[in-house]
Image (tube, rainbow, N blue to C red; front, side):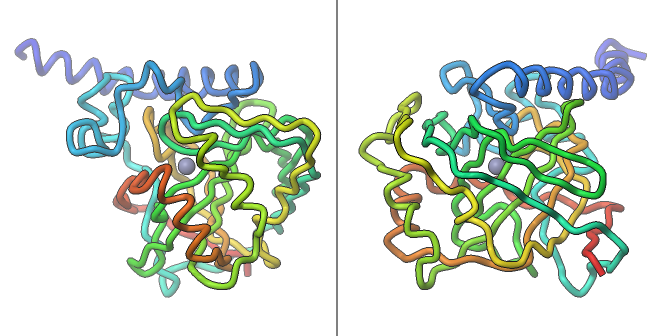
Length: 274
Ligand SMILES: [Zn+2]
């Protein structure tokens, strides 16, 4: 066995341990401050990954050994959801309770992230998660029958043990349903990584970014950004929402193409509530 083989073997043996360690890091981060778990987004200044050809999704695993799951992981996100292959199951309702809270938005170098500083919860059966932040991808990361939406918002939640659950909402162009989005993404205030917008005096209603129906597709996946940690429970809402062309352009102007391509589904099933 040559040295590189041995290295590969060690890497494979260490993988499960690494995964747990990252999850632990995430939960500590999640409990530790306003940054939240960041769905894997670390501080922008230290990051070397992005969505370019040189440091983009196809190269993430080569940039840092801790990003290796981006290449070798078997249950990565996002995925293409094929409604005709989705399996109906006896699953609990998804219950989201987001009360209005002060505005706190940052440009973290990869996306615009809205940080949750007040109590906002997600309940799934007997599991309770807290909302940490939500952020934008354009075009969408998940696709339906191979078709991307214009925008996808990820609401990132963590439970007390650091398990992550992400609710994804897809947006198409149409009559605007969330007028606040324009003022939320004041692009002149958020164009540079590190830019921050805090308005303690104005309450912002996160609920306005959710469709009437919380029917979902669910599957077991990963963070869609390095370190691509697995064990993330995804809920992609079935009802698509609408943004005006102007709102979509506001989002596109700051970060366009911050979407990881869909990943192989492998042996995973996508379930929906029967
Ligand atoms: Zn995301």
